[in-house]
Image (cartoon, rainbow, N blue to C red):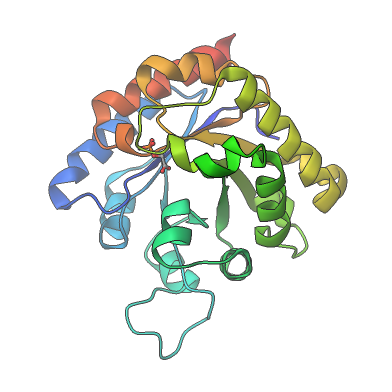
Length: 252
Ligand code: PGA
């Protein structure tokens, strides 16, 4: 596994061409923070332009369709993403699971479609607040992993898992460091069951209200391989704060 922390910005449905200046500033900062692997996932409309503007960072998408092509008005295939310059795609984000009714099987099909064209994938999992309160967080996440992870050969090399408790996304609330560590360990165990030894190479990111001021402590948890960042990735100023915290951990 790459030892470099992986910090990924998910711009969600934010961003116009004016925001390319933020991408450029993030890219410039990445040049001096080489101990961190940095990527952003802008909306579809900005992937190509972001790829052209940013030399160092990864650029990816937030979703794809599982089919290679066809009569799917408004959808985007993995091959189209690749053609526009994307190197990876996020699949199974809780907002897609909630807003578009995506099931684990849908997420898995999307992940496999992405791998088939050579994209890397970030597969998101995470429990709701009610599920956590009911003591079911680990069970829910384990089931999501089982149903959502791609099973093609070499999948483990191209897959990153993002653990994002739904109740921590955009709320300013985060689990305790102990809870994050315990869940990441449980995910690692589950990954071993699915991918065998190759699972040890899969990075597990934490996502949900990661900011410059809590990134250092979250990234200090040994099982946390990086962060998936929403709101705080929208300006270079806040995102570079997280990148810097990650670089300091890389040095530790
Ligand atoms: P947030 O979003 O950092 O704004 O909580 C994280 C995500 O949804 O990936």
